[in-house]
Image (cartoon, rainbow over all chains, first blue to last red; front, side, top):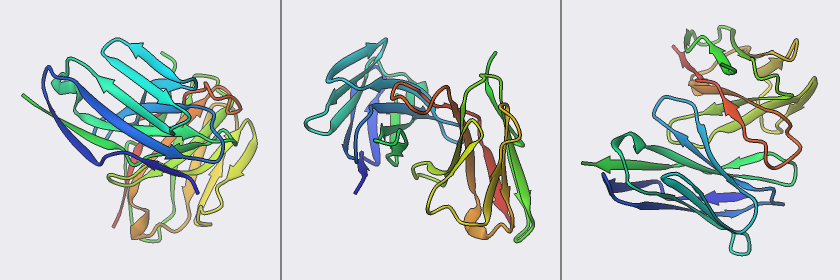
Length: 109
Length: 115
């Protein structure tokens, strides 16, 4: 079957670093996406990984290990506005997105 | 700015009363998607169009229908809304659904309340 697992909720402190993990099992693999979703709003694209390794984009980095079916999103220098849900999604062999339920990140001052 | 627009942002309907949600895009993307998302859950794909080619997910209820009259517009019709259909409905587009690098761009969503 197809499955995406990520923690339901995480808490971190403003200015700190947090790592949100995602593990997946999908039929075929055409890449992994991370989206940010603020409460009551639509998801917005953060990153796409299809090869193993780390992709850095400003304060956000995303890592992929295809052999382990594992990805993480690393957020540095956390700001209050980073409080949101972070959704992991893989693209399967039919180029359809398989979504995780999201990790709600709570930032405390 | 190129974007995905959804109207209305908030829709209230009565149990069993048909409702139509609309989505338009100025990105000129080939693929349009409709998702249903309930609180703290993953978005659930209902349909997608690759140009005019309609693709229905196997577990999408018959109560949900969709139309794409042209590249720019796509509609979601809920023929007889039930209380369980209350959710956020997200429209998304991608340039080409057939390659992995195509990110999906989302509209702001329509929050549907069923009374």
